[in-house]
Image (cartoon, rainbow, N blue to C red; front, side, top):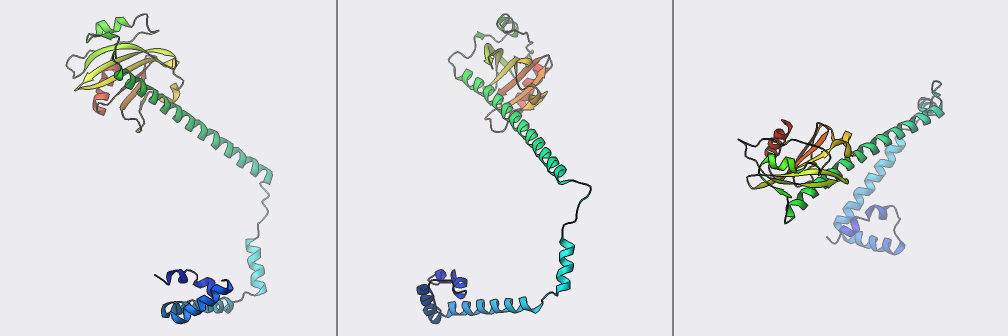
Length: 250
């Protein structure tokens, strides 16, 4: 271990690039250390072999001339440099625009999903999560009339594992919508319904999409009849999908 610090400077020593005092100290060490002495000899022999090999083959003047001609750039008559730079700049601008559009769209979509998740969590944490408490869809659906600017249908839950707990009016991007809460095996699932036109990310959401993996919930969203539906909860993906299918069937 003592010689490790010396060995890291061996090449510098052999090239004579160490300060004078360190050169003298290195000389004394090499003479008294068999390991460093052997390493120094190996390095010297390698350096000499490289020098000899480098001088063994010297290219002729004719060889140099032919090589320079072969690698010299040839004039391109079909393209003007100005056109090349313009085309490159255009490609860069197009790529930048596409990238910024994709990143912006994806960022906005993920932000919308996060807002839906926040609404879900805030409602369940409330002491009064629903304004209309009923398991009967014929009671809950009429309650929303006059409170939101659209109508929607609720699925029949008979012969399913889901039960309706109630609903409330909620807001997304300052637009009123319906928030329904369902229960399945002690898991609460929120169903949000908003006018499709009120959402700024209609094209990016598509007809059917899933929430990003970063969210701690499973979520499914789709567009139907001019309305945008979100089904979200900590229930399994299968349960989320089953409840979504019940709504899609209406």
